[in-house]
Amino acid sequence: MLEAVRFGLALEFASPELKADKEVVLRATIIYGEALKYASSKLQADKETVLVSMTQDLSSLQFASEELMADKDFLLEAVKQNEEALVYVSSELKADRGFMREAVKQNGHALKHA
Image (cartoon, rainbow, N blue to C red):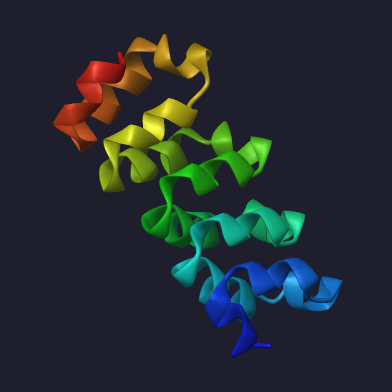
């Protein structure tokens, strides 16, 4: 399966056990970030897995768990990697002055999303 997920979307057809295997999912998301869509819910809530997937394809953030997308520390790390991560942040957090101040400290380009 590790070889098959080099094509990213092969993860869609993997067994539930493999969709929960971090090594398999990381390999798939390195190639095709949106493969996160097919990962187990546990890995969709895993910071490292989601950061790896968003490095390859920012839109994979839409498949991150709700809990992770509410985690300010995680989101600040995501913004540090790519200010466009703020596109996927809730409007409540974008309205949070403290959060946005920290986001801009992490990445000055984040200001355009405030």
